Image (tube, rainbow, N blue to C red; front, side):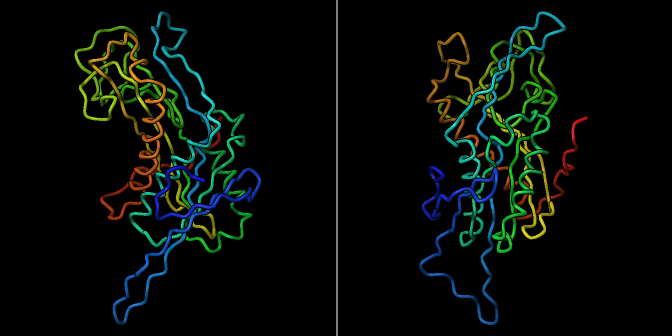
Length: 304
């Protein structure tokens, strides 16, 4: 069951429907007094959406370090394995909340790619491989003939540094900027121990507005969202969305910025951030009112 789902959504956990594809179905409860269509108009048929997360069960942990030579990058990297399905659950909740507000009568079906399907896939290839595996398994499901759209969120890989974060980030994770560096919102950070006058906007540990700081804990979500026609599995729309939230407490006595949040605080903030990021990605890719052209991101090509 997806933890924390809205009261208007009934969630039923089912068995594996297809190899590598775990399903959770959801049907929005109909209002007790549905509105009566105006005379001469036909009642709109509620749509059915399949929401799919392939973000997986890994949190990438990247920490800035002093760069003393040109042969070593200025970051330490680790991968944290999370085995409670909470990451995919947060992604699905974020998408579900957006659709529940927009189309409360819609039917939502929740699916997740089994994380083991991407276990040995390089970060830069996960986006492409996840989409290929999902399309292959979805093609086997006769249920999709009753669906209208399939919305998938996969990890997205970004080689370059941006907005004060490290290079080579993908999926969801935490970045620790622990040293004073010259950081500009529109350019890459300078790795090292250079004193900065100011840095990016941050938030306080309680989520309220903070100060500008070049030291922070950054939560990030680098994902690609795909909208597929449920019948043909053709990609109708896709876009990459890169979100981050920087946290810094100027009143903290901790010498290490990474210790400004307790593990429980960090876990709670990370889960809430991941959920919001997924919702923003869906809302921005499929807006209620088109406000100009969206960025077009071509489907990923195999790495050479």
